[in-house]
Image (tube, rainbow, N blue to C red):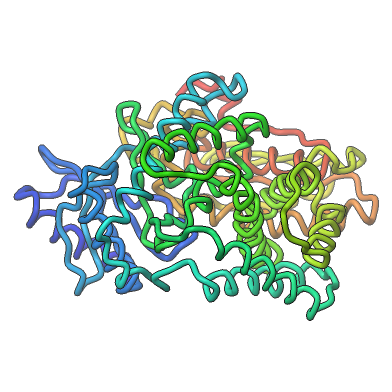
Amino acid sequence: MKENTIQEKIKSLYESWAGEMVTSILPLTRTASNRSYFRITSAHKKAIGAYGPDPKENAAFVAFTKDFHQKGLSVPELYAEDLSQQIYIQEDLGATTLYSFLLQNKEGFSEALMGMYKKVLAGLARIQVEGTKDLDYSVAYPRSDFDRQSMQWDLNGFKYFFLKLAGITFDEQALENDFNTLMDFLLSADRNYFMYRDFQARNIMLKKGEPYFIDYQGGRRGALHYDPASLLFQPKAGIPFAIREELVAYYLDVIAAMIPVDRKKFMDHFYGYVLIRRIQAFGTYGQRGLHERRAYFMNGLPIALQDIKWVLDHKELPIELPELLRVLRLAIADPRFQPAGAQPNNEFLTVRVNSFSYKFNHPEDPSGNGGGFVFDCRFVHNPGRYEPYKKLTGRDEPVITFLKENSNMADYLNNIYQIVDEAVENYIERSFTNLMVSFGCTGGQHRSVYAADMLAAHLRKKYGVKVILNHIRQEAKGWKN
């Protein structure tokens, strides 16, 4: 369905629910899924509109949401639905996720952050234990349980999308033997609780200091261990290992107040679930990073591998997995997947990155190479069209949030990273000394400034090249708009 058609259908459903005309409807950032979200406002109300192309996934979300909300769990209220059109309207929980809250904390893992994670884990425990009571798992999609079949899908994704694409050789029969050993072990845990499946910081909204949970349409019946493992070992969250163990202990305190729990048995299984969760993620990193060359996933892979390294170095599973652990060690040691700080310094190459306005001050190349790449940002949704952003620039947080949530800037930049990365690698190999990349937009103020800043940071982190960053129009104006 075309986006303008989706918006019209969602607008009609919203107005039928609200009894008011829509005054604003803005598309939000697409997730890794194919679902589309929109922030909608009218004179006295606001909501989030959603379109999902998969009817079974929509049915699962709607059914789970109604059940959880009736039980008083911290999920958005469902205002209206038209599943025949694959759309629904839900409560707007704001724009602050646990992940954005995490990034705002510059002083390490603060007491405030620790307190928030404890609130999140307490809320998770309620959904897992109270949410499972009389829950209709027949609507769960794609399966009602996180069973052997579900695990096999994840393990095959790891084998075919990560190991094979990365060129890491393995003994297929030995690896399959280890897969079966791991599955047998994980399936021996109690699996009668709601398993969120994708419990990570971007799926947790913070409203008035309290956590709310979204995007659980992939939930199913499973073990308690998987979701805290997913949250606490989310690579880009960067939670210190000692803090992770303290938070697991806190989570067990909360669970123990609700149901009997054998702590030793729980911890025996916990790191096995950390392992399969990360293995599932490696399959995604392989597909989206190695195959589709999406920079976001490639940047997260080294961190995820270092997390697994810590587990292998510090925790001993009560099962033998020789071939699986061997290939994981090979991936950890692979020079392609080292953390950014371990990348070589390539300052022999200088990359000039510019932002400019197509109306003024086109970039000049002092190296004599003739100007290099020039990318047009003018088709990206422009925050400069809206009054609150007119005097701000692409370096101001409201503009950055707008571009992340209301434009296709992330996909635009990913495509550019693929092009520029290839050129940078070629120039380094051939000992070239200069490359220039420029971004233009209408005023040289919002989109081009943000894009230039992002590319400069990407190149410094990934290649260690010398980057000279110029914001031509903004510098000419003294950053006064």
